Length: 149
Image: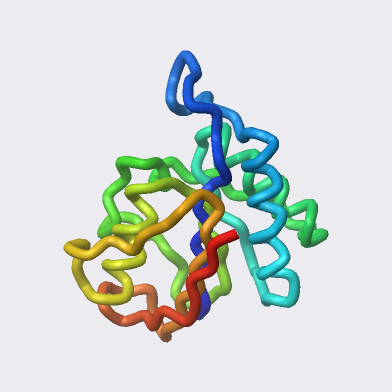
């Protein structure tokens, strides 16, 4: 299986609720640069946080790639989500893009790669990571690339 993890693009610093923060124009540009790295990848699905900035990020990627399947919104892709729980929800045999937030994405990458979250992967806005492994289990996936826009 392959797993791509994309942090949302730059977002507005303030909104009435954190979940309502929208992408800035720079954030949209960052996302489109990262989407180019996914152009020839065999994606089966795109799973996305319910937060506005992640939804906007995923929609931009979907459009840039001409991806025809619907986005799958999941509640456990928010900034404070539990990486161990998230890993248990990942499909065993698919190529999936996750669109989410820090600190969650850094911790999930560390868990899948090292088996713990003590050294979270640094992720800038719109950073994209590619992982590969037979199963999405703690410590069982190999980090293939980290790209920052």
